[in-house]
Length: 193
Image 1: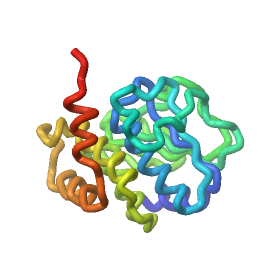
Image 2: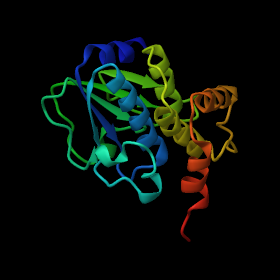
Image 3: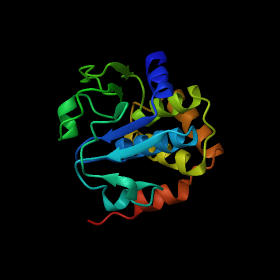
């Protein structure tokens, strides 16, 4: 955690990268962290090789994702929710520091700094801890983005990965204004079969 927080504090231009075929945890984690970093005056960009799926576009900021790789002149690249660098689907800049935030057991610790916790229910749970560690005030948009990651990766709190930490984090995100109704409608009820 210390290395991740120090890297985020020290960087001015930060590129957040979500994995190919993006799920709500990778998109929500990147959005929550990026929106929070912007409140600290950081210049943030969001990158995903594939388009943000329609059902996730209700999240504030999804229109800012680009399908281009991060530019070479960023200070820091942060990957969220993937265990190996090839999940980016495009080449990542070689020069800057690379922070890897993930909860998968298959993670190969490819970052300069690795915040990998396989006991976390979702990468969004880890990202929310980072946001708290940075002292960032939660907005409803950030909280909604983080909660969607936790809800989907726990199967709406039905999977064995749902522990007290995940439930506590979800409660804190609701207190911060996470829009549970928007998540439920867009992610769980608005499916096309």
